[in-house]
Image (tube, rainbow, N blue to C red; front, side, top):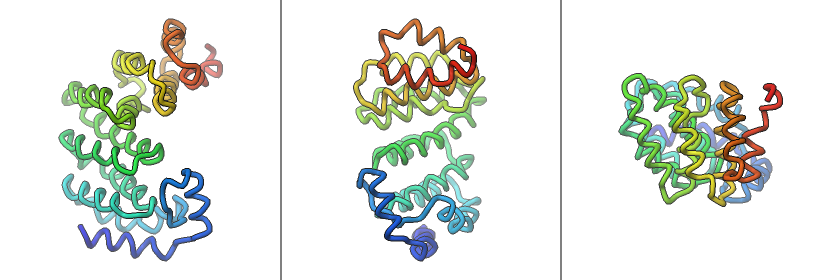
Amino acid sequence: MKEIIRQCRLDLSPLADPVRAQGMSAYMKNRFEFLGIPAPERRKACVDIIRQLKTADADQLLAVATGLWNCREREYQYLAIDILAKHYRHLRVQDVPALLALVQQKSWWDSVDGLAGVFGDLLRLHLTEDRKIQQTMDAALLHEDFWVRRIALLHQLGWREKTDVDRLCRYALTLAAEDEFFIRKAIGWALRDYAWHDPAMISVFLDQHKAQFSALTQREAGKNLKKLGF
């Protein structure tokens, strides 16, 4: 896999733009260094690498993702997420701990939310085998790292009729009292997303528990309800 990482560097390094990199770093509150490559250009440059990995197994994909995560500039973490998102069908439920390890490294909303999509795709893929696989997220909900808790909240985004509504509501209420901005916003996001499928249910749920949810959560959760007639 070292050759893959080397090729990623060769593909991306020539596209570096120091001026754009400063702006991208500032947008992320200077938490990370950037090459300065917009997402469309990054993906175009790495399309062959991503295609090359279509035959990789789960261990190989995770090795590449980990190697990219260890690279200094943020674009390499984005590329790791692109690879995992493209080839999530090759991942296994037993890979959840390894993916959660990535969540806890160089953590910020951009990487965490990208990985949330990978978790969602992976777990939804295996729902027909056993709904108990979501119990991995029950444990994540109680993790000491709030970014892992955010993953638990967001993993059902886009599931619509496949959403475990009881779990969605239980997660929201379990973390409702938290002061962390990214948790309060994630609760609202998760509820708002499901509102596209069942706005009546979300409207009633918010009304029943308005004393428990922060103003931020209620605002986020209710953003689309008026558009949907509630």
